[in-house]
Image (cartoon, rainbow over all chains, first blue to last red; front, side, top):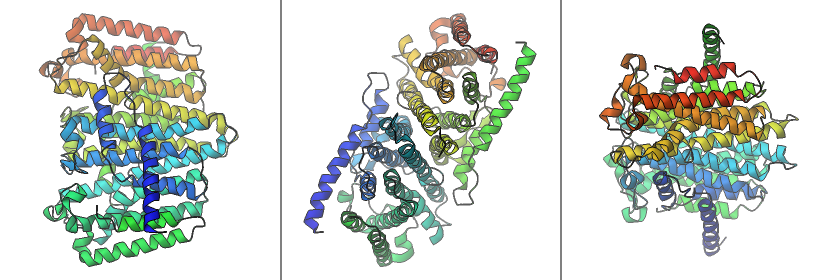
Length: 309
Length: 309
């Protein structure tokens, strides 16, 4: 696929994803609770690459999915991701004032509102994804599609929770507070796999589940997500050293300041780059085993690995 | 129902509810993320009246429910409640050191861990409630029961989120930060209805939905929850003035110190007591319209209104 064709397609697909996300944001109900809704929407509309819903959409269509039931899930996975950013930025964790070049939620709305808006986004992710059932009530294929939706929800909760992203966050934060004394390669892999990969595995697997892909294809998507997530996180380590502050929209060299153990401190810049390359090749290799048009996805995976922001 | 018989039955039922809750708590998976699980379990095992799962159980059985699908939901509603307590106690909101006579989660585990443990409990509530689908996969009545489970989940998310508890919390906190200047009776009713009643309506309605009760009975349970919740919260206002610190397990007269508008400041102690009584009578009246054995529930509602802790 030519670079120009890929970029055009990416632009088109990203716009479609953006529309889906916006459609599922909560509307003003005229009640007293305006501020929490505003804080939720502020964070959801602050940009971001929308990688997770895009991957879900691609996976769903790769396995033949054609209905709108994937859409509430696309919005939901972005809500979960955004929830984690809001809480991560709070003074109790990373104490970041800036995210994607904009003031973080607690800077704009205060700490209490940011805490509650994060909770509300996590909860609203479920409220939103559960809407997918409304599409199939009373339908003849309720059992078949209903079981898929239930499994997709179970995957979403599992990948988010204490066997998923929140486990990784928790171990990461614990190390942070204790000065990163005990981090070795195993633990770093654990943190990256849980903190980052789980929420990349989730959309890829949910897309496959909703489309009715068989178990082995679901597992292949899971494996793909693990590698993409790891590459993505190591690239983050690299960009923290080599990146441009303005382009990234956040301060660089924060890992060094915080004396953080990263893939760069463990393997050096070149070693880390090599690792990203290997993981990306493995991810592309996995995609090549799947029948169907994976050209765009392969290109996307490579683009993510080469990202500069 | 004699007091002695009621107390015996309450004891028996509470023990059964406790067992259900404990059975659904996350087990140690041997991974690095020990602390977040410990913090979750610490807060879940710190006692509490388990009113919400008990009300769900009663509602489910009142409408003829007999299966175990209600159990994951019973545990889930208590997890959501506990999640809100952990986050409420954080320095960014109420900054409370003591809850039910024990140090709060952030005092024991630190602020970052308490934040993440609260998130994890909210998420685990969904992970747990979603297990109910496992009971019916492949069964002939999947469509009927599956739709009930989906509706129960939708109710849970709606009552918890920005059209439920979190809306109430948000408005409450916003007023707190602005010195309670603008609270009138309407807004206080809104806060109490959302902050407290929504999470009492939820278990009563979920019980009815899962049992297959018809729409009018579901709405009756909703109305019941609204009144019980309001009575419960006004009783809280009263106990903050008249209660015993040791019995309550938390400091009294905190509303006065924080110059908070409450039913006691609006109506005086006697007026507030009168309101609790009226609401309790209305709640009992609603229960009397429902066929079936509501004696225990009526007694429970009255006991809640007369509570001293």
